[in-house]
Image (cartoon, rainbow, N blue to C red; front, side, top):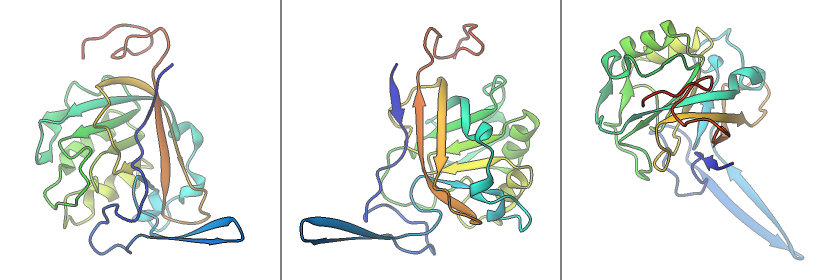
Length: 215
């Protein structure tokens, strides 16, 4: 079975969303023992947004159900997209998936740019209507730079968990098993996460429930 780590490597040079706290990594070595000190925000690097990120009464990151964070996920290749992701970009591509990961032209980039691909309100509504419970994207945010929070609010108010700043640059479209576990930060609005995909043994990559599909 092949595993695919779609988590960005964490270091002091990682991009930071403008206005968020800077990332700092300091190491101390004494008597042959090394200890590192980290300074970061709950939304640094590859991370999850919990509903409480935008919804005051929403669940916190330590209370996200495991059944949301683990299971089959469909990678949708939108790498030809360089702007907003609309409903028409997603129609017919979800194919019953409860967890979707959006691969865009930003995947693998190391520097922040404010014109990254992002969901429109119509796309968010479409994914909700499709019954999606987990949405991941390889950009700094699921919402446009300078957005009014409406995309986040619509998704998180329906307990749809958002993962941001994935690295899908080496992953092809199709269905995988996914494990997306955030740090267990009690009562907080998000957390860095390690997100792993694995191939599904005995199944075509683009299939659901064992039935082959065209992707």
